[in-house]
Length: 495
Ligand SMILES: Nc1nc2c(ncn2[C@@H]2O[C@H](COP(=O)(O)OP(=O)(O)O)[C@@H](O)[C@H]2O)c(=O)[nH]1
Ligand SMILES: [Mg+2]
Image (cartoon, rainbow, N blue to C red; front, side, top):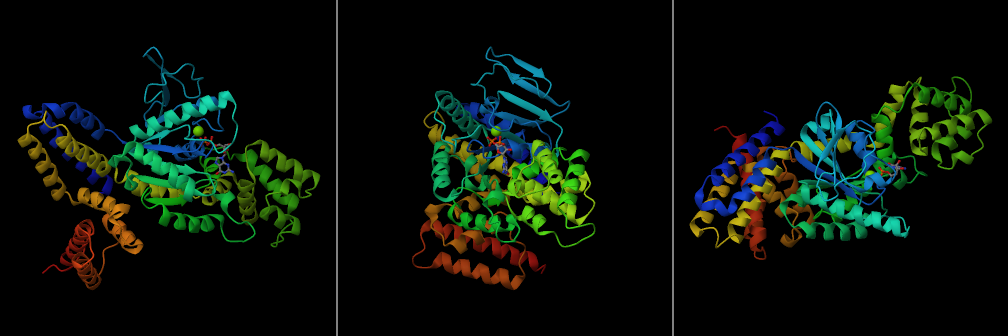
């Protein structure tokens, strides 16, 4: 059984328990919450894509679903939430202010929408990603530009309200930022943002950050791959932002969308070939000419003295929505082979970082969807079993908690998620190395260790639990780590 299937089973196991609670007369006070969770447990995990206006959110969503559907470049239409769901035939459902909805073809003008509805625009698509996840494209929390017109401010306010609403409705967050200093700015934003919800739904275990416009962050005076450079940057940010996001990765959404949405056609391939020929040193020459080299390394190459033919080829490509980075990636590919549309798209995709992002989304969200939903439901019901007293009889509330606890014990992946969350909780004050070791251990990312190593680690964590200055919280998580490693040890030894 694969992870995703096992986790869906887990969600249905939790659903069975909640249905049992819902049938219990003593738990009538919990019933509306149980019903809401039961509905959600049968749904796909909802991932909200949030960040500043123009971060590249819609461009990324287009790349992920493989179609040019999400409205890009800040048109007024993007100031509402767009829900991307699995479904055929492909269509769009629009919520109207009068409470009705219209089902229309994708691309139809939106018209008046009910902004109070959580999903004013829904797009149903046949896409691999959407088989496991529902994606919510949001307008943006704030703008990095400083345009203070009345209209812009009104739209930004509306966009922020919509983004907040989407995050409240979501189970997981994909946080995109184009800003240069994710440290301070985004830490403050993320902190305000998570404080607004304070539930396990937007816990760091359920959030990823993408450094968008990755190509612009790289130092082009060095030859190292821009993505590799920005990945090193992401690793540094990871250490600072551990209590907000599970992982951080670079992405060039524009290159990704161009590669995946079928816009690299034979016409573009022809123009790229012509441009490559116009700037090559000569037929069959391996080493690029000085002009060509400059073209490949510089962003100013529109002014770099191309001949007339080269210049018109370049402008034609610009007209088709290609930026400098995309042209550079395609020209480099054209250097290597005969540059068909498919090969150019492949080169762009490799230059975009999209595959690593998809991998991360799959590991963090798609494969764990059932666990995240189950955990959020259990945590919420357990919390309400305290807060709903006196409406809930004390004995019934204790029964709820005992059953939830028993389910966690029976399904260790649920307890692992709780422990992963504890490991990245700054209040627990673990050392950075301890934190990353535990995060890997409880997320199943650390591979099975040889018996000797597992035994050594089990002992180390036992010693940590027993150390003089260990706080009760540190002690509890250290004992969990000890148990986890001790289990590996037993599993390794069939006797
Ligand atoms: N240079 C560059 N531009 C990008 C990238 N991704 C998106 N853009 C451009 O940034 C603008 C805003 O993108 P959009 O996806 O609408 O941003 P959103 O407001 O976050 O949804 C568009 O003109 C995109 O073409 C990228 O990776 N690199
Ligand atoms: Mg957008």
